[in-house]
Amino acid sequence: MPVNGLTIMQPRTTQPRTAPARTTPVTTPALQDDRLRPDRRVDPAHAAHRPALAPRETIHLAQLLDRAATRWPDRPAVEAEDGRVLTYDQLDRAADRLDARLARYGIGRGDRVGLMLPKSPEAVAAIHGVLRSGAAYVPVDPTAPPARGAGILADAFVKAVVVDSGLVDALRSCWPGPGPMPKLIVVGEGAADHPDGVSWAEVMADEAPTPDPSPRFDGDVAYILYTSGSTGTPKGVTLSHANALCFLDWCASAFGVEPGRRFASHAPFHFDLSVFDLYACCRAGGTLVLVGEGLGKDPARLGDFLTDRAIDVWYSAPSILALLSEYGRIDRPGLTPPRLVLFAGEVFPIAHLRRLRRLWPYATLWNLYGPTETNVCTAHRIPEAIADDRDEPFPIGPVCPPLRARVVDEQGDDVPDGDEGELLIAGPGVMRGYFGRDDLTEAAFIESVDGTRWYRTGDLVSDLGGGCFSYHGRRDRMVKKRGYRIELGEIEAALHRLDGVSRAAVVATPTAEGLVISAFVAMKAGQKGSIIALKRHCASVLPSYMIPDAIRFLPSIPSTSTDKVDYPHLGALASGPEPEAA
Image (cartoon, rainbow, N blue to C red; front, side, top):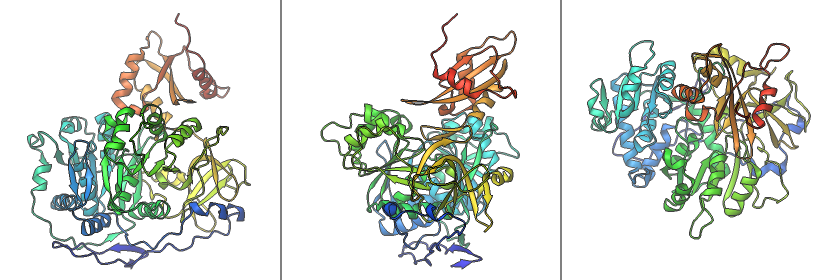
């Protein structure tokens, strides 16, 4: 039902279940921009990448579980690494109980709830329960230093945290405020031993909730994903239900996943790739098969996992697939490859991709591109054969409808086909902004004369013709490693906080095996540098994927004539041989 330009979801019905009423479909009007160059529109040759979108039946992510539990109550919804399984009916009931508890705490639409959990059925139920309450979930990396997670949750002003029992004491000890600790819902062994929180088991024993009469708007915030920030402070990307559903609508049209398929959940829930895993699976009535942290880094075991768990759909960063193709023994007899393989987050070196294609000749492979701020915004389907003499990565493809794209120069003017420029994205999949950071939000967008709000991706691309884009790297110092977005400035800020460090600079160097992050450090007079001490310090304040791969000590950090860090010179040093020990 349209209200003030938004669309609302009607309240849920209580047990016994009946088929949900069909909501008024939301159709996306044709988006036209007369200022776009005619040759920026997509060539018919790329029509296979731009399927027509069906009218939307869902306007709120919470509806996905509502519908799945009604249509397929006994179908397995979540399967854990340890063999535990939740059906859609059980997942629905667990989400209901958490919704009821949050309502008891006065938490609902417009609020935020933190998640500090390892991947588990409880974590999936918590996500759906938060969405059902009308609040937004804020997932943090449970393996990162607790102070980082606590800082993110405090920055988001969460009113409650669903937290693993093993992390409660650390979270409490480093909570920065302002204000008191949020409500704690504790999951795991010993959860009842924390008197200032309530255990997950107690929440699950609550009575069934009464229906919430308040409406749900598609413009409401669904989740906030924190990414690396250049100042040393992570920034929260705020995404609405409409943003997520725009992406999911395109996925349904492009991939055509059949009901009941088995989706591997490889990406952690604080990583944007998890949006596809969680909701495309639920939308299709599939089974979300959780890939644990340890398993995800062991290619041999992961190869066994694909067959043992009969995985149909896989989505990860290319580096994981490269390891899998090289060390996962996925060419052995009896292994059935996934039907659909998606990768995103970094460039897939062509040699590794060629090997994967030869090992999985019948799988459908897609190269997806898009920053967290836009979800996936371009896509390219990999052909069934990759030529032996091809030495360049595949393009990132044309823009995914109903999004739009422009390629502009430093003055914001459109560039001709073939010229490099910054990729701009507009449309209903683009984020609302950065949580609590109007300054960063304003800097991230430009507005055209017709009022269109364009997100500046910071990525350099060129149009190969007909709207198919080739990726050329970043215009700033942000990089991606194993799919994670990393601001090198945040690593520098962490190094500068260690006593004895005078100056530090960080560069990233691409190699055949992936991206290598190198830190160069100049110590204060009289101070001796220690690689072990620096790495320990980084491990205490940064997630593991941001810890430098290599650390070198220099008498001073080289500078340009304008007294800026000479990053090109440091890049050359990083690419060269290690200096001989004195």
